[in-house]
Length: 285
Image (cartoon, rainbow, N blue to C red; front, side, top):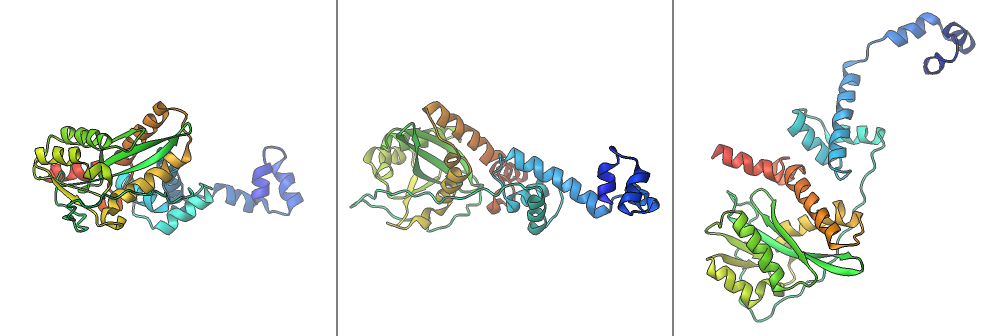
């Protein structure tokens, strides 16, 4: 049947049906048959999947696409169905590479863990978390400092430098602090890296009446949210590219910030993006 339909523009349909042994009435019934509701629904879903997959620059898998279909189109669909449709459309699955990073730890410094893995504050600007990772640019390392607001998992500041110094942490924190309206009663949690235990960094936080909290030594899960963010930053953006200049890295980070905050659904937010989660909070409030 499909062969007749494929060749109908090259040969007479009557001749094709005779040669291929297909009844003409059966063929015309096949051609004029209306697609089923399931077929039409799958066509709609394929369009939605392709649009979301393209906007994410091939970063999303079936789980994330299912979440965005629900948020953007109001359509409930199983992960399995999304996966099958993606497989039919031959949309490639992104490979993942776990980033490796050796941290330095400060000794003989008062580093209490006040957060205690309580990763679900009730409002924005209650708890921020931070860490530093790295990326090679034209043969040289660049160290990237980022700060996440735990409420909606929003990236609120980042910066990078050629050395992982206290100044890098100070510059990043200052950008976050002033862009978020100089919040009061803030808890700032990091690992025990020397950038965060440095005297001048701690003096800055003391001056602003900000409480500092630290992960236990060699316990990365105490700062799991920022660790997770860096994991996805690496596999969805940085590890997919090579950079020849700081300008290229800067542009890449800027684009990922926009994608992460405005487009990427987060399971902690029930499929909402970080910005959507914050907008919802302020709307209800």
